[in-house]
Length: 300
Image (cartoon, rainbow, N blue to C red):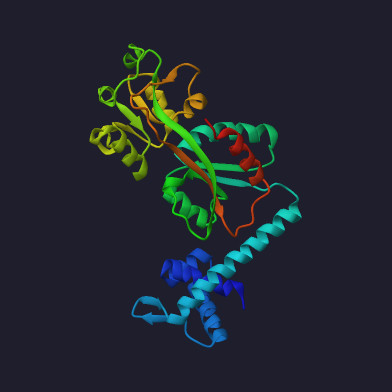
């Protein structure tokens, strides 16, 4: 069976159109049609029903699609493994990071690779976890380091628990709330802008359970973005208070410029990070470097 025929069928299923599938495969529409016809002839049955202007998979076509995806991915992994073996190098790294891991890992890891492994191509992208999991499944990332509360366990995902990092409140040194030298209540915090990344539903529920309905992040947070260094920059230059992973302060702010704000009761929550890869995918040798780096640097 010709692997290219399966790839053409998958492209048709993904795009829903012969013309778009042909464009995606960089062939003519007539060549794509002949390829699908050849596959149907080899299998002895129709795979696509042409219903007006629509193309619908036959019941057997749906079965072929499911198996074809596995076959094409396995073939790609064989080529990937052979490439690593033949080239004798560490390979490239494509990493997706959640907002917390990005603040803690991105800059120091790029520096580490530039100094220690300058021949390895490294690409790191911080973005929303749900979107990153899709890109991991599409083979656009080799690994993710993200908040596990945003990841749904699945058979195709290999998840390594990296433990929890303590969360709390951070403010600038010299903030009015520090003047008393004693822990403050959450109501006092709300007199000032509250800064945070978009929180998971679990983290939001924990805040409400700890401090009451006024702590609902949808209404309490006034400065919200995925870029933690930008949030802490605002905290350094204003009376805003950051709520999130405490360890980020040591990485993205000058020593002593941002400090932990004592709250009563203390926040009994923390970020729960994980290292996520595809269960059946061949790992690039360079991924071992990143895994070791994460184990050392993703900590309180």
